[in-house]
Image (cartoon, rainbow, N blue to C red; front, side, top):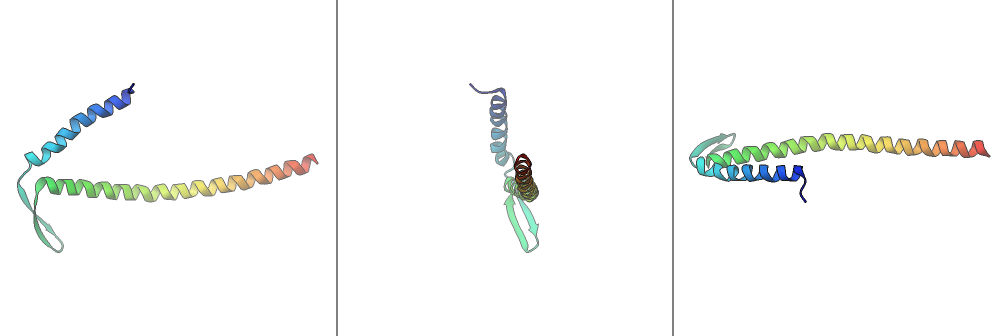
Length: 97
């Protein structure tokens, strides 16, 4: 049985995918794209898709950098916690003897 969230995702996909597939049909004109090293003629839908893809990649890379930095902090804190737990266990053993 599908959860309510899964059903919502399927319904959202059923709306978004056809709209995404219709985009090239609605924007089939060619536009001039000027960049630093030259100029190219691209379909508008291809430029939109490239811009979205580039934005997605840059967003993932920026989040990956901050996620890795936070993960490194977690590893350091866990390592320190294990050291402190061992030291506490050693003290308790020494006190009970």
